[in-house]
Amino acid sequence: MTTRSESDGAALGDYLTASPRLFENPLLDKLSRVHWTVPLYAYAPAIAVLAYLSFTNVSALAAVGCMLLGYIGWTLIEYFGHRYLFHWEFPGQFGKRLHFLIHGVHHHHPSDPLRLVMPVLLSGPILLAAFAVIAVLFGFPLTWPVLAGFTAGYLAYDMVHYHVHHREPTTRFGRMLRRVHMLHHFRDHDRGFGVSAPWWDYVFGTSYASESARGERR
Image (cartoon, rainbow, N blue to C red):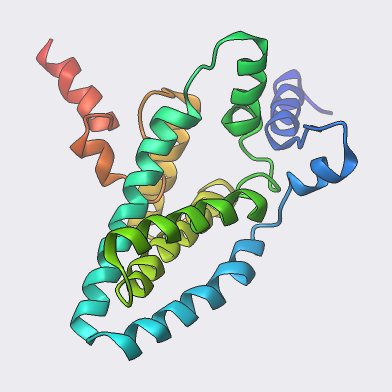
């Protein structure tokens, strides 16, 4: 016999994992869903090519340094994009709809397995824009290692985001990432913006530890 609490828990689980229709157009709606392995197939080969171009055109030290710089650049975009763009409350009905499409749907249905990584139609233009900006700032051949690090950072973000929602972490770091992200979803949406790079929350004062420290000083 199923108890009331078990039924309520099952209903909540169904709601959290639901994958609601976002667009009337069936093609657009299909493109809004993506299996978590798609970014791996799309970008892992690109990262390998960029790494090859990096180490064949600049010194190993310069390549590694520029890759690290590109990775740090991604983590900052991840943090500020999540904090300000994803959680920005746009005005009006259109604004509400836009916010829901960008990020609200994920907070309503955080365990939807098909909306935990970015569709290539969204991530592709982001990475192309990054390529253009990096090329202007660094020129060639340094663009290759910086872009390699940036793209690797993006791919790590997508994989971490999926796995903190759908895998049981086995490492201390993995458990910390999952805990912080679940706190963001279910405790305080205004903290814990770094999904794969939680250290920026400590730097910019949006970590849960920062909240505790402030509470203790009151």
